[in-house]
Image 1 (cartoon, rainbow, N blue to C red):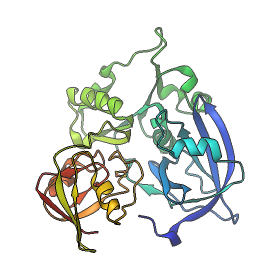
Image 2 (cartoon, rainbow, N blue to C red):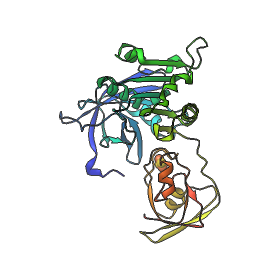
Image 3 (cartoon, rainbow, N blue to C red):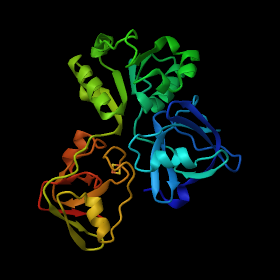
Image 4 (cartoon, helix red, strand yellow):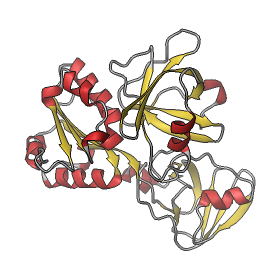
Length: 321
Ligand code: FES
């Protein structure tokens, strides 16, 4: 959760439709100063409304502290976030955003990096491509898109210094280039890293290909944009330790929904187990982790749970909330 005092007041200084259903916005500080520094892979929590927060990766060209650039997809099944941005955001509008947060770190010392973007997943990877290029690092950018009209940042990529390291795959272009996992084989050597960002199906597909090519899990870094998480399951009891309130979580309810009914509100954003906003400490019981946010090692420790989607393997779960 962001502390109110840590939020930045920024103004929308540019707002452009750069592809079908994709909006690029630039945010500058309202007082003419510089924005906090960040590294590639970072995102901002954008406060679309007081209780509506969404994460968007910063995709500025040069780790700019003058403006933060974001790329935003209008989601077909938007739960309010992107829909409201497309309908309400205007040039010069003032917004609150968090300071940059990075949970998708780039290792600039890798021998070679492979960046795989699915659709709007290009945003953090574009920023990584600029960083790798600036460091004269060896890398390839593989960008997958459903159709050409949804290809964001196309001209910019073609004009960049890494155009010849970029491979663009368009699903509905039968004569376009096709992905061949052979490009990954060279990754069998150590210290080569793979970065994946996009929808869960895309990430799982590339991840499987990489593992078949001999990559280990710790060479593969992921940032999911959505997931097909199943949130339902057997009922159990949850105790909110700080307030002493306990509640039954019914089969078709999430922990967050059950707690909200008894007045315990947990901050939520993606509600799909991908962003980590709702991460809550566990004091007792064993979570049934359904999220994509924590690593397998973190899940095995059972120190935290994502109440937006995860459940319990024990009859009772005590949370430090
Ligand atoms: S709200 Fe995003 S992981 Fe729970």
